[in-house]
Image (cartoon, rainbow, N blue to C red; front, side, top):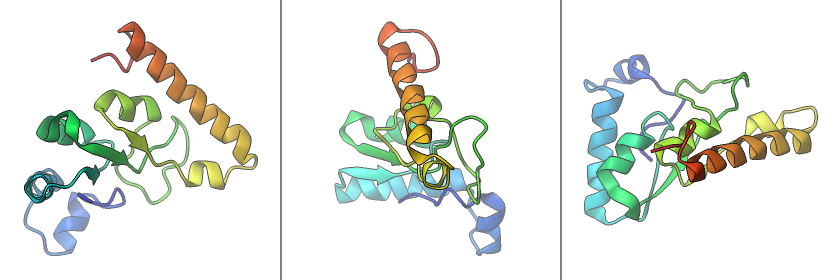
Length: 131
C-alpha cells in the first residue's frame, strides 16, 4: 500500500511526516520494487506515476474509485473508473458507491457500463482511455 486514499498532505503533516504524498508514494514504490512485490495498492491519482515506475510487470489495485457525481465519502483522492483505467490501473476497488446504493445491482451495472465505455475508447485509440 502506498498511501491511503482517505489521506491528503495536510493529514500527513498532522501525523508528523515531513514529506508530501508524492514523495512518500515514490519511496514506498521504490521499496516495493526492491522487495520484488508483484502488486501495489495505490490511489487512482498516483496510478500513472506508479505505473511509470514499475512498468507493466506490476499489478496495480486502485481504491478510491467513484463514478462522476458519486459521493466521495471519507476519500480525499479519488477518480472515476475511466480515469483510473486510463492511468494504468489493473483492478478498481469500488465499494460504498455500490453497497450503499438503493439498488446495488443497478449501480454496479452503471459502473460496469462506464468501465466498458473506457475499454472501448481505449481499444479505438480515442477518448479518455487513449494513451
